[in-house]
Image (tube, rainbow, N blue to C red; front, side, top):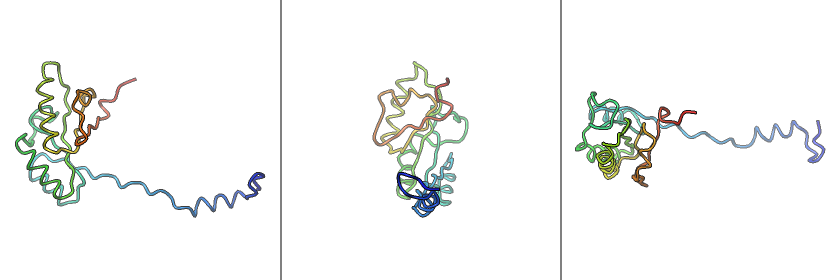
Amino acid sequence: MQLPMLGLETNSIAAARESSPAKVPARPELLAPAGDWECAKAAVENGADAIYFGLERFNARMRAHNFTEADLPRLMEFLHRRGVKGYVTFNTLVFANEMSEAERYLRTIISAGVDAAIVQDAPQPRAGLRSRKCRARVSPAAAPST
């Protein structure tokens, strides 16, 4: 079949598409959970690109074994020296009476060099705490419902 304006056959167009270099999709990030030093080290040794972990507060798994605020600078140094990112879970609802503590906590997280925060409550990143050093990733559970 001939395309009148271009004078090309449809088979030629299909062949041209097949021969052109296709965009290679980006490699997915291997993200591993880590609740303690042993898990963090195992994740890094086994090729994780990033780990996620909770701290003592504002974490949906507060009863689980977690890193502490005091661990954070050393943990981030350990990860970054090995080219691994660290994401902290900040995935609980924050109530009005907790806002000042949440803000202090987020500032501590940012200053420790955390690469991103995984949040549940979408307004948290808008609380004046945006930083070029730390991104917020909103979980699907926090997406506005329609």
